[in-house]
Amino acid sequence: MMHTMTELISKEQIAARIRELGEAIRQDYKDEPLVTVCVLKGAVIFFADLLRAIGRDTTIDFMRIASYGCSVSREMNVRLLLDLETDIAGKHVLIVEDIIDTGHSMRCVLDLLATRNPASLKICSLLDKRERREVPVDVAYAGFVVEQGFIVGYGLDFAEGLRHLEAIHILDPQA
Ligand code: IMP
Ligand code: MG
Image (cartoon, rainbow, N blue to C red):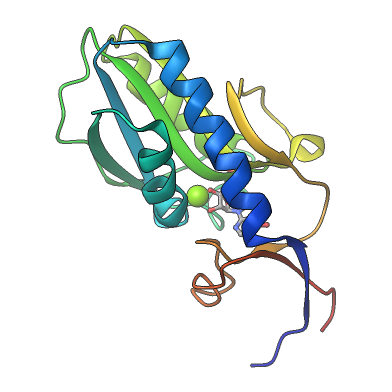
């Protein structure tokens, strides 16, 4: 399958923004123990870069949820495919996501993790498609706000492809 796409955010812009996010996170959490949660699969590349930008110890863990397909349903029937190993009770938790679109997936993750009584629960998302939000989700750290369109690269996929691209691209419609 051939797709045409347009570069939206360069790898230099991504790197510069991640340095800023890392700095903000490091200052906000000071020396408090922190659990960082990577939402698989799309956030994996961002997560690896963000951890190094935060530049301090964090306990890392992983979750996986079924995203599209489920999240388009009004019922918000998001499926949990992989759960955390870490007991987050009493701990500060930062969820690291690739992109927040309608907000259904993140709402579901937040509601689930909140039942485990973390000391705090915040979100860092590389991309925020704010205009498309259907349920409220507070994004404490947003890399870039993007508008409509399908985004690929830097971990984000189209049909499991194009995750390896170093820059963030937008797929050209009907290409
Ligand atoms: P939401 O539940 O509608 O917020 O969907 C969030 C999930 O859908 C993200 O974690 C992505 O996995 C996927 N997603 C949403 N928009 C895009 C996009 O433009 N490109 C790639 N994946 C996307
Ligand atoms: Mg995702």
